[in-house]
Image (cartoon, rainbow, N blue to C red; front, side, top):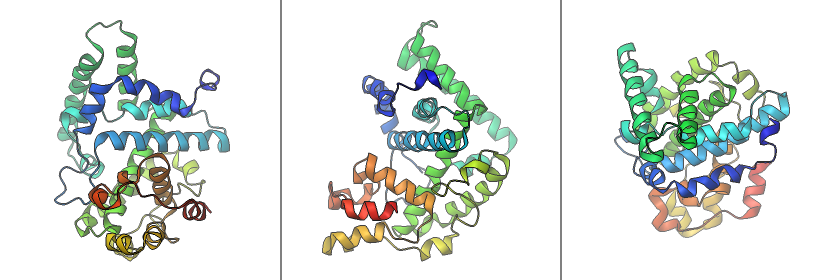
Length: 290
C-alpha cells in the first residue's frame, strides 16, 4: 500500500470534476426504478459516491485493525466506477439479480460487458492506448470478477447501501419495501456465508451484519419512524427520531456517512422542498457517534 500512502480520499474524487458527461449519465439513472413507490429516490451518482465513502472506510478499518492487504484508495477508485454499466442496462436491485435463472444471469453479464465497451469509448475515446480508457476497463474487469480484496469490499459496501436504503424507506413510511427487505435478508443469508471477508467485517461493531442484525419487515416497522410533520413543528425532535438509539449499527454508519459527506437531501430527496439544507446539530451527531 506504499504507493497510495500519500493519496487522500478527496484526491481520488478530484478527477471526477472533469467527467461531466459521465456524471450526467449517472444522475439520469434512478435507484429502485422497478419499485412501485419510492419516497426518497436517489440516482446512481449519489449511490456511487456513498458506496465510495463506505468502501474507503470499510477497507481502511480492515487494513488497520486486521492488517489485511486491502488498499482503501483502490477500493474507493473501484467504487467510483462500479455501477457504470447500469447507465445502459438500467438499475437492477441486488435481490433481483441473485434470483435470476442461469440463462438470465448470462444475458445480463453479456449486456454489461457490451455496456462497458460502449462507455469506455463514450468517456475516453477509441484509442486503445489511452491510459484513462485502459484504467477504466481494468477497474470494470476487477469489479466483474470480484476476486481482489478491494473489489470484494466494494461489493459488500454496495450491498450495505441497498439494504440501508430499504430500511430507510420503511422507517419513512413506505410499506411497499417490505418484500424488498425480505429479499435482502435472503440474499445476505447466502452472501455472509460465502464471503470470507465477513469474518472480519463482523468483527467491527460499526458494520456487523448477520441475520440477527438485519431487521425483518416487522422489526423494521418497529424502529423509530421518521415523520416529516415533526420537522415542521420541532426540528430537534425530528433529528432525534432520525438518529434513534436502537438502530442497527451498519444503518447508523450509513446515516452518519450520508449526513457528514452529503447534503441532507441525499437522505430525504422526497422531502427536500421542506427540509432544504437543514442538518442535525453537532451535539446530536456526536451523541449518535457514541
